[in-house]
Length: 466
Ligand code: OOG
Ligand code: NI
Image 1: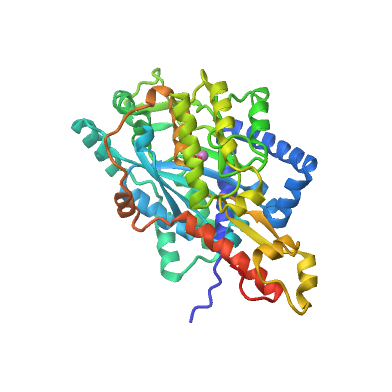
Image 2: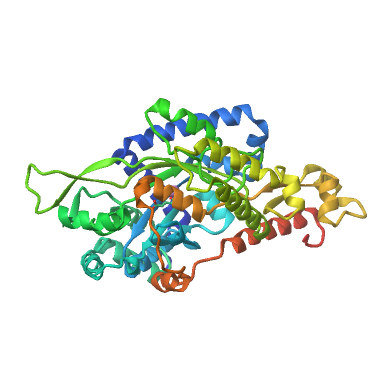
């Protein structure tokens, strides 16, 4: 019998996330500057706002704040997506959520690879927003066939990465030496390449179809295009960015600023123009490509289906009122409309909880634990909360938002990239490409909430709370 001791997938993920951050910092120095700014503002928030600090301490999130980040990549074929799915599985990351960005004019559909259990998220919340290009939406046959041919010739994984994935699948894990090698090998897939796999003329044709198509098709691999730290005050970072030589996009995506943050707010800075050598290029010719950018995010409460429906309704109403995509020109008006429209979303955790708009974690208080031995303990959740025996904290939203994601894509592709596609959403096709189904994120939040209620009842020595 094998007595191998495997490296824990959560540890492999934490290690990979650190290695990726290190690589990106070297490749894109502005990312380092942004990280510093975010850390500085997080520190300020923690020392000025005791409530935020207490809440982060209660949930343990304070420990993951500094290592929290997400990245994004875009792939071109079903085979690439399926192998990525196996690669991320070695690190305990599963595909959560299905995002169709086609209605917003971006020819991709996506998922986010991430850990699914709250204890694993606590060790490393690293996520990768992964998009599959929908080549079938290229109408011109010749160009589509060319793109397919180029993609069919590339291999985005090192041979050793594949061997190690197979070894992990066969044995049920990797020992620490293999795990360390796996991290280094896997990193290669996400590295930037400053030489293209096509000529400048071919690149221009792909680019004219959609800038995203050129970004995916013309290169050796799916370079990581941004890494995003988590801030506790996105408005403060947005305002401080220009002072650090970073120009943010005009509007913050997601809900407006609130006392009690919900879901996800994001902003990014424009992609850098980087020198590229194209096939057949003479020494004096130069070409360039812009793909890599920076982003920050502020995470708030995960919403229930009811809360999410309210969010979607209010967001749509605000966008209808604006009558256009948010941009530099209408940013101030958009912010005013959003603030006004979202007055209809209760801005207190206790109200959000009572109305069933968000998911929560429950904790027995000291008072609750002290009351445990009393003869007739309280058994109802509401009564326990009213009596101060149980407290609650919102569950953090761990996922993404399709409208926001499209806004992030657009801001980095340029506004001329807006297009209209006839194709419908195709979740089944995505699942076939992936080789499995994506997980419904709402079920994950519901399960975490349920586990916290169960743990609470165990501590209080009462029948399971509902
Ligand atoms: C992904 C854009 C979406 C987010 O945080 O919503 C995204 C990409 O540009 O590949 O990263
Ligand atoms: Ni992002």
